[in-house]
Image (cartoon, rainbow, N blue to C red; front, side, top):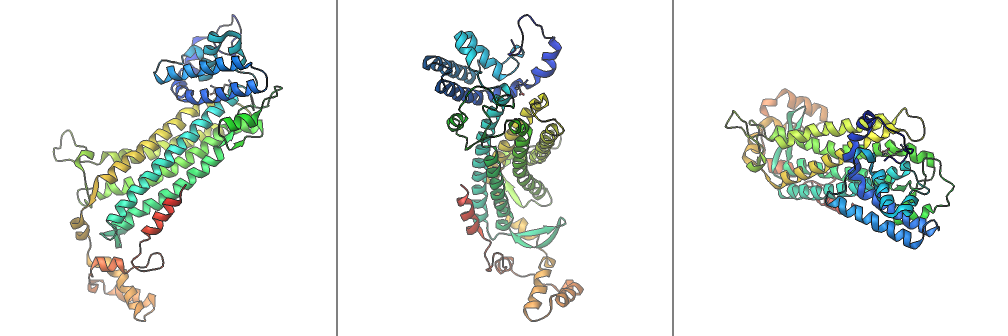
Length: 429
Ligand code: ARG
């Protein structure tokens, strides 16, 4: 029975089918966080004298039972129960009668769902940060191992100047460090407790919001109850924007590696166990994992648009529209975590193919360096550029290794800045 259903009233089955059935999976994933919120609520209600200590203990025991059953896949939320909050309250009422009926004192499902989603997102952001740190460390190790292995640098998808495997791969380490900072910022924003704002206008019950804030380990209270409601969708948009940044970094890796592992280029030898084949062409070895990742960037982007767009143009306060954004948020976390994990595995199973990399160097790749050499012997840069441009056939190849090491990058020659990146990565909390 729905929490709002009046005795004897009936709900048309089409209503259940249209608005409830689609979201049960996302509600199921919220369950552990709703239990956490409800335990804090029970403790707070006892503290302010609404529950007797024994009643609180009973409710907490019931909530823990639900959690246990959920972990075994035995606590199912059905359409009759509408959502996770209803399923939990109905269980408590069925088991503890009048005591169960007290758990909802001073709260609404509106702040309840906000609290559960906030706790879930905080958890998952932390997990994403950990996974991003781990892959950044793996890529940095890869960069250190192949720091000065020559590799062409590209502009306009055309060979431009000498670069190295270390320089290419460590670009993603710096990118990930920025993404981690963005996620930390998102974590800071969402780390506010909405519990107790009720339907969006507070309540007459003298609840202790500071207590639940501490219990639930939020770093601050969400102050304005109307904003608490309006922040649904808005804070999720921050979350999606943070995840999107991670996906953009991984997507760039995917673009590069699909291109670099093409038959013509093959700059990297990749463990065949990570490649897939064709049902008709026996020779094919494809890097499907990076193609799927590339596509997944668009899926997360679509989710981000969905979340931003459902949340806009709604009047202040709770609107049921917001219910549908649980799924894209959850899916985006899963896609991002899976994408970090597969990219991590790829870097652990990939080696530069030094021969192919060197083969790609022709004399013209040194043209810019040739003009800079003229500058070093006193010519103006524009004259040097013209002179080399008119005599490209005379540009001579030099030792690529020496060339790469002679470049200035972070203020001193031959320094790709890997130690600095290591320091930065270690300083990410
Ligand atoms: N399951 C609901 C949701 O996700 C909980 C809030 C219900 N509130 C309401 N006013 N109907 O939005």
